[in-house]
Length: 236
Length: 152
Image (cartoon, rainbow over all chains, first blue to last red; front, side, top):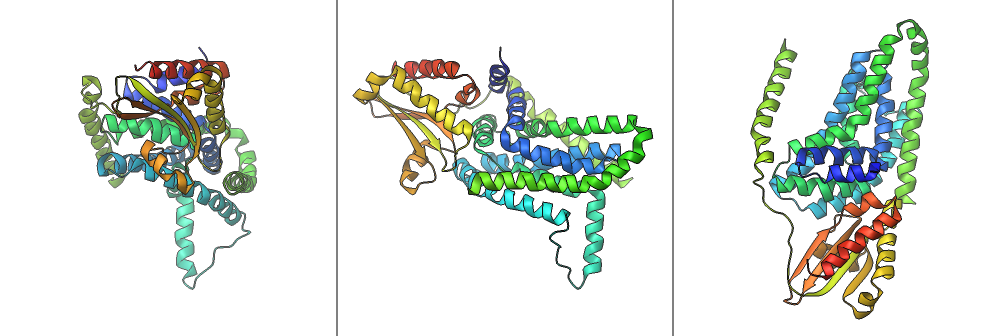
C-alpha cells in the first residue's frame, strides 16, 4: 500500500475523528500549509534559548490555527453561512493578502521598513516590546492568519472533506480541532526536537546565543521568500 | 495562582465538551448528507472546476479526468450521455453552473440526471489522492463513471 492510498483510506475512515486527523495531516503536507508551517518554524526558532518557551510557542501557533478552523466550521455548521461563498472568498482574497503581508513583515523585521513612530512613541514601544518579548500573541496571530490562507488543494481538504464531516455530525468543535492539531503537528514536532536538542546542548549554549543574532536575519529572509512565493503564485 | 485557575477552568471545559460530544460518534446516529437518485440515467456531467490560477494538482486532476473520459467513454461522449468540461469558477458566465454544483474551488464534480428529470450532484475527493499514479487514477475514475452510467 502506498503512502497516498494509506492517507486516502484513513482520511475517508468511517470514524470521523480519525478521518479528521488524517485530513489534517494531508493538509500539513500540501503546498501552502507546508510553506506557512516552515515560516512558523522559523518564527518559533527565535525562542531557541528557552526550550520550554519554544515548545509553548509551537502549541500556541497551533491554537491560532485551531481558532480559525473552529470559527470557520462554526460559521458554516451553526450559523449556516454558505460554504461555497466563504470558500471562494477566502481562496480569492486570503492568498492575495498573505504574500504581500509576509513580505511586509519580513521587511519590518529587517528594519528596512520602519514602523511610523507616533508622538506617544514611548508607550507604543513599550507595548511592542512586551508583545515581542512574550511572543505568544505573535505566534497565535500567525496561526490565525496562516490558517486563513487556503490554496486549491488545502481548500479541497477543508471545504470538500472536513466541512462535510463536521456538517454530518453537526460538530464544529472537536472535528475541526483534531484537524487543526494535525495541520500544526509538523511545527509542534519541530518545537519538540528543538527543545530536546537545546537542553542536551548545554555547553554549546554560547554558540547558540551568537547564532541567535543571525537568526533574526534568517527568519526575516524566510518570511520574504515565502511571501514572494505566494505573491508570484497568485498575482503573476 | 490566577494562571493556574485559568488552565484548570479550560481543562475542565475541554473534558466536559469531550464527554458530551464523543458519544455521538459511536452511536452512528447521524443525518445522511448528499443526494442520490435512482432509475434510468439520462445524462452524466463530469466537471472539473478550477480557478484562473491553477495549481499543479488542480491541472492534473482535470487533465487525467479528460484523458480517462476520452480513452474509455468516447461513445458516450459522442451520444451526449456523458458530458465533460473544464469550468473556471472565476468567470461570471459560469456563475450559474458553479452555484448549481456548489463548487467550493478546484474540484471534480459529477452530476447525474435521470429520465424523471431529477438531478443529483457530488464531489469526488478521492481523485486528489491518486494524481501521483495516473493508471490508478484512470482505473478508479473509469469505475466510478461506469457505476454512475449503470444507474447505481
